[in-house]
Image (tube, rainbow, N blue to C red; front, top):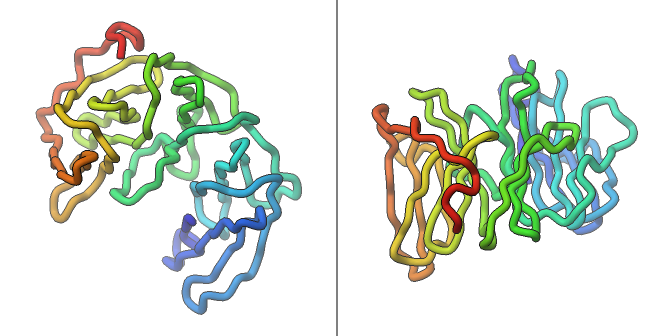
Length: 233
């Protein structure tokens, strides 16, 4: 499930729900009534939204065997990536603590060419691509990528993707590896965003149920950039 604003001026949410019948359903959040639906070629796994409903929205939908782009006004909804995707995110400037596994760099409505989809494949690769599905860069990993999470540091104006492996996380942008953080225990999941009053906080949950909390200060240093494969996993 995802959501988007009805318009820039009208602060009402439109809920977007995926069903086991391969449909995307648009629901008015005020009266919980469905007013539109779209049939997909496969069952949706996760939904990410860009824009507002009344203006110019785009949905990026991960299905069981592809990534599908849905734009307002289009009658045909094409698969921009035709392969099984492990996890996916949108690269963006705003990050919620409760985003799903699928990541996209999500920029304002007049998004530039730097707007990107980032996904991991079953072949242990992290792929950066544009909103048309064109591959821009690839990180080849030796270990399974458990999940991806979008990262944005407002003071540095730095955007990245956090990739989770067994006992470590790695920060990647579209050209470099920015940092590696190792842990003594196996990671179950992570979330990045606002935690209470603290912004830019990373929550790490381990397999044994314990949790670590890390806040990124204004002085956080990401200047030491590395090649993708400079430190094998």
